[in-house]
Amino acid sequence: MRFSAWNILKQGLTGNAGWKPHWRSPEPKPAYDVIIIGGGGHGLSTAYYLAKEHGITNIAILEKGYIGGGNVGRNTTIVRANYQLPGNSEFYSHSLKLWEGMEQDLNFNAMMSQRGVIMLCHSDGQRDAFARRGNAIVNQGDDAELLDTDGVRKMLPYLDFEQTRFPIYGGLLHRRGGSARHDAVAWGYARGADMRGVDIIQNCEVTGIDIENGAVRGVQTTKGPIRARKIGMTVAGRTSQVAAMAGMRLPIESHVLQAFVTEGLKPIIDTVISYGMGHFYISQSDKGGLVFGGDLDFYASYAARGNLPMVEHVAEAAMTLMPVIGKARMLRSWGGIMDMTPDGSPIIDKTHVDGLYLNGGWCYGGFKAVPGSGNVFAHLMATDTYHDAATKFRLDRFKTGRGLMDEEGTGSQHNLH
Ligand SMILES: Cc1cc2nc3c(=O)[nH]c(=O)nc-3n(C[C@H](O)[C@H](O)[C@H](O)COP(=O)(O)OP(=O)(O)OC[C@H]3O[C@@H](n4cnc5c(N)ncnc54)[C@H](O)[C@@H]3O)c2cc1C
Image 1 (cartoon, protein in one colour):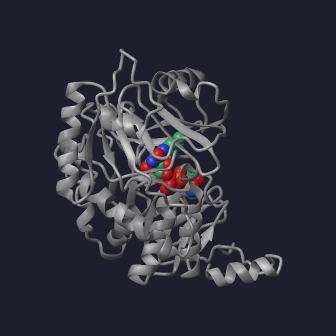
Image 2: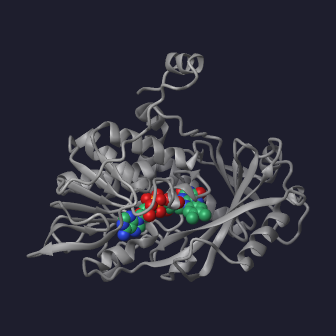
């Protein structure tokens, strides 16, 4: 069923009784051509592009919970293509271009809003680093503008420009960045994949991966065994656990990242702001809540909720940057499990097992990657060759030390990226 002005009018006049569920709830078949483990953003978009661009439709997505219950529905929804290093730069550029046509492509409103992303700088050194980054972004073909203090003041007059501890020296503005409604992205890809024949099987946990003579043969699940010759792992925070089912020990640590939302307020923040000190970023949702986050909780955990010290840290950063929001009441917070790699960049690669493919290590930046990741991972799974936009996300970089992409220059410590 397509969304169109005519359909909305017709449904509105007939009690909205004619809408169909966005996807079916089939029981698993005994065998598929492809199994995708994990029905988050990356798994859903992979299945969608496998069906749409490669004509592979006999696919099952096996999701242990429900669609939108993982990180894809838990993030702070920032979308951007302002990376600096080769490898990341062309990939996120590719992903942002897909975002720009995604809603039309899926015929689904994901509330994609290119309201801009600005990263603030607070020292000469940071401003120089942003100038370098801006040049790299522009060379890649994306947009970046370096603003001075007055430029930022004009755009964001409610920030505290009088603070002496972390004075605002300027900012790097990326106008094509912005935000989207996170679970709508999952629903849109789920609907698009289902419409092309993909089986989305919820409440179906993969408990084992069957391997014979070095090749995958299928999976064991809570709904019984299912056979397939090609299997993709897209399980985000659970990547090391699922890969361990195939005998792999990955260079990934799982950490908690929290998000916070205030009560609904009148519109004040019409862009996405990232504070260069104290790791704090904020935007305002279309319902009016201020949506913000900070750093990881700093210890490895599989709990999808965080602890109070980080709440305090984030609230302090918020008050330093924009005391104007001090009276807003924080209504909700939650956590998601981040699959952190030692260089902070992801992995999209084949594995030592024939027919088993790995997509993970998204750290806390995988929402903006959803279209791009699904697109290039589908290419890899369908053709066994790397997509031009994702040639550098190789697993063996952690073994050889060659080709590491440490965007932040913080060294090989998972929790610092
Ligand atoms: C608080 C927070 C803020 C964030 N902010 C941003 C942001 O602003 N911008 C950005 O780009 N990124 C952000 N991220 C990161 C982003 O959300 C993730 O990198 C991305 O969503 C991960 O990919 P996914 O959507 O496929 O993950 P998920 O939605 O977690 O999908 C993985 C799925 O695998 C399933 N699964 C796990 N194990 C099994 C199994 N054994 N069998 C079957 N299924 C299984 C899980 O149930 C889950 O649904 C943020 C994350 C958090 C938590």
